[in-house]
Amino acid sequence: AQKVTQAQTEISVVEKEDVTLDCVYETRDTTYYLFWYKQPPSGELVFLIRRNSFDEQNEISGRYSWNFQKSTSSFNFTITASQVVDSAVYFCSSSQGGSEKLVFGKGTKLTVNP
Amino acid sequence: KAGVTQTPRYLIKTRGQQVTLSCSPISGHRSVSWYQQTPGQGLQFLFEYFSETQRNKGNFPGRFSGRQFSNSRSEMNVSTLELGDSALYLCASSYWGREGEKLFFGSGTQLSVL
Image 1 (tube, rainbow over the protein chains, first blue to last red):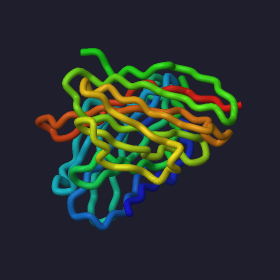
Image 2 (cartoon, rainbow over the protein chains, first blue to last red):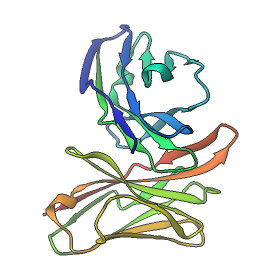
Image 3 (cartoon, rainbow over the protein chains, first blue to last red):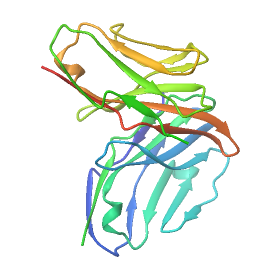
Image 4 (spheres, rainbow over the protein chains, first blue to last red):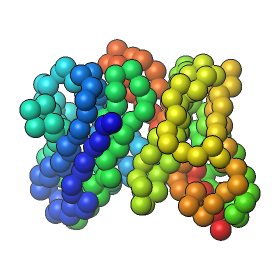
């Protein structure tokens, strides 16, 4: 069975600080996908990124970057120069290849203070 | 394109009643999945439908059921409501695009059971 662990329950930073959200996953599948979602107070889960198990390339999208390391089963998410609008709960999740059944971590609540 | 639409946004029911939640996927999406979100258990997969067929099911009792119509709209039903069913119910629709599968979530239905 798949499992996703987000050890950080809450993080509080001051605007413009960099912050890294940790995600560790467990799976026995050779083909799997990893995701990050953002949940603002409105409740909707906003898709941020999807990675498949064969692509360990790190990715940067604006102030967001992701570090995927199979050797440590980690898929960490870094926000550079954080902004107040980044305040939300962030979820890491995984799925088996070809399945829409996502297994989510418990989420990390990020608060960015002005 | 309109996003995933869930109705109603809020619902209050009493124990023993039943409830039906509705989800309209993004136009062109044929797959719909449902998730339950509670403070204690986090986000948990309920079921997934594709072309009116249930393709995957999570570990929930038989009181939770769903269906999908020919226009891809989906409903989920919970019978004999219990206090523990109070949760945010999220629906997601998906397609297989150039970057692979992406799930797009609605804002959810907040169900309170009194």
